[in-house]
Length: 50
Image 1 (cartoon, rainbow, N blue to C red):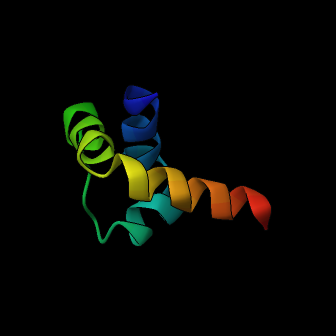
Image 2 (cartoon, helix red, strand yellow):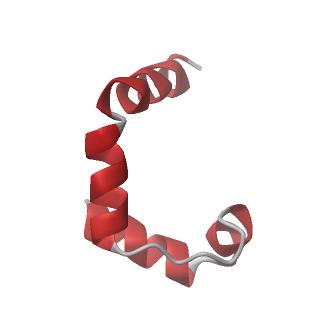
């Protein structure tokens, strides 16, 4: 999933704009998810509830 997300960020203009021209690689995204697991899950839960 991280590799796919990294690819989406570097390919889609909307994602490039949202990330401020940053293009994180799969390791950066994986580390973020690992370091912020509880908060990441809560945001996903809230997003799905919308």
